[in-house]
Length: 364
Image (cartoon, rainbow, N blue to C red; front, side, top):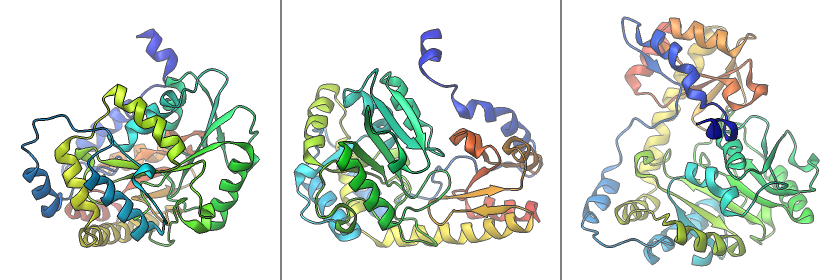
């Protein structure tokens, strides 16, 4: 166990347990807004595709079926404005967190190599670097990093936790800088279809990458946009020179998306209506929670996209967590995402309509 604790940080969510117990003791029950886990039903057409593929006795392939690769290439061209995407540009993965945690290892990074990610960020970027025993560094502006030894640059737009969206110009400047210095970009775009006050743009867009996928890979997930967190369904799109070797490594590791899940992804990517319906649900919950938090004395920063409100009331994030737990509301402390989040909390709007209404009532 000591070897594990030396390599990895303390699992952050364990620190929230006492506050969860306080919130759960509320006479009307807990309103858990701490984790962005979907609570709404999986759309019926996706469930049907999964069930129809249930009789799948053979091993699936790591690269997925041709139909799955067709669905991915079609979606990125239709939805993201990408051009001339072939099967060589895509790779299914077993959920995006698995990829984030193991990517530096699969890329062959190690001591002396450096991974960089945003100052406020999903903690698994650091975990991935640590698992590979690589160095890691945070940034405010990636183009101000020292490129020496930098092998992997994580972008995250829309951001988890802040909901901040990088503009097309910011993305293009970063891609140009990374190419100039031979730095590989992986862009975590898992919340891209959840823009509220901004329109998120992918690094796959030709206005960002100049029509070339050299040195860039985008990460996409169906967990939030299609309520498929339980299916572990995600994929990569980008530079074939990066994805080809990753495919071979993942074949050796047996990292296969199940055949029924592959069928479900095909159905999900082929239908835009269920995404619109889910967006409407989230938009209503977001509006209700934002108004209630602001009336309660909170300031909302960024939050123009994603499934979270980045909220502060000029005190330690743990003081805020404790205050809300006394109301039976559980939120995530901002320092889970880096020291710079020490005076903010992340409020997810993935609870049911009934629980969101209850949170609004308590905040009033």
